Image (cartoon, rainbow, N blue to C red):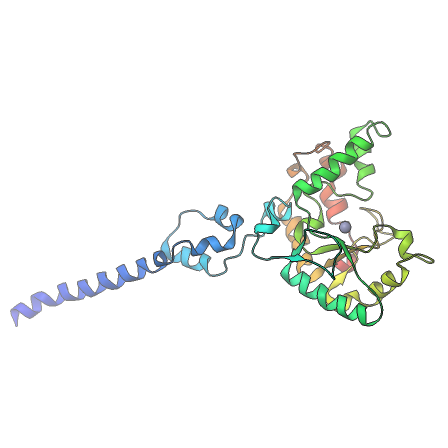
Length: 273
Ligand SMILES: [Zn+2]
């Protein structure tokens, strides 16, 4: 009896240690599984307890952080992006977030049935691609608009600052023709615009740059946004990003004076918010 009594605490302690060791080793038995989320998720991870790590592995989604919202990532390496090909576009290298593309595909089919052919001319553009557009225009308007703020405002009529474009998010597309008049009376794509204005909302799409807004880019009848995703991204942008954040392109310092976040990122059609 005496011997058993002495052994009992040792046995209980042994069982306890064993189960702990098993638990602790479980997450380590899946090396690399947390990397599935892509670079953004990995960059966000700090050394933490086994329990916390196990929870983070489960969603395996890159974070919706400042870098994502400002287009500082490679969509071709992002697990939630898909390549878009014909018949939805006649361009190469088009990418969208999967959910946005699936909704677009349904919209495309419905439009097609009514004799309307939607054609994606531009989709996701990351920071570097937007910077190429911006810096090109910065050179183009150098003589016409020598002042930094005036030149930025000129470009901002139709083009976003790198870091502030909705095209960074994988939720927005430019359709058929980047030209308002071709989508108006007598224009080649009037039928396309009329169809979108009547039906795009049925598929989750909204026109963020309508006529008559108080601030922001000019009207763009060709630009449509998948709001089940982009509504949340707009809100997240408002929470996370200030005008001081913009940098790495010509005339970036004018972002603060122009109040790019308030006037441009948030200066959209109220129905898209
Ligand atoms: Zn656009």
